[in-house]
Image (cartoon, rainbow, N blue to C red; front, side):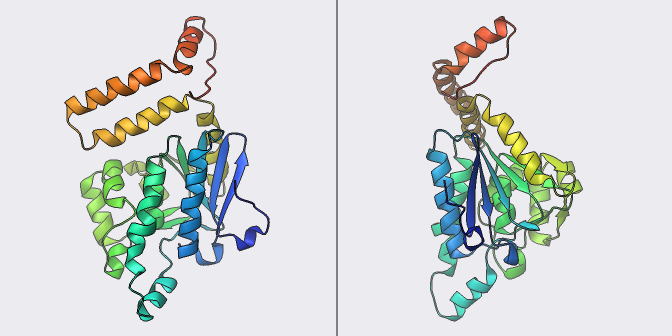
Length: 269
């Protein structure tokens, strides 16, 4: 876990409560825009919690009044004007590994969208398994407005959440979607009163952390894989993962608890 001493100087904070890790993007003065350092620290934090067996669920949020407004365009423009050839290499170097770390994490990830989520920030929220949105939250895909295509997985995640037609319109027209509309579209899991996104997301994560996290990981893998597989391939993966889950400690213990009409206790393996 990251040290939260001198938190104001840290672009990414990691806090632990029980089996839940909360990762906070911590550049509130710039609405948590993603500098190179923030992207590097975020990937490191995601890698750390993914490999920590004592962490069973993750919350991802932003400090201050925004979730994340995406790429730090001031830094980006400065790099372009300096003649640095690397600015757009950040997609492969940073954004792609970040979204893969979220999507492929073998534990649930809950986004607490506490305000504006724009560009790669919106994409990051879409990559999470659940999105709990503050009533003030808004989602904006502004890539086209600066002459860019989508990145950070939005071309894959968003159509699966709201359908290709709505995803295309949101991406090309670059019009913000408020929390109520996002809920109606299926873009978010829940909308909560102002100021409660973090608290409600942590409560959901705590609930998930007590569940069968091995089964959750298998289900995440199945849903992601099925998007590009045939029925036969999906059935083969189901058989493989079901066999693995069936050999875990959780399955027989939960089955016995069900028969005994007792609450199950899951250990996640």
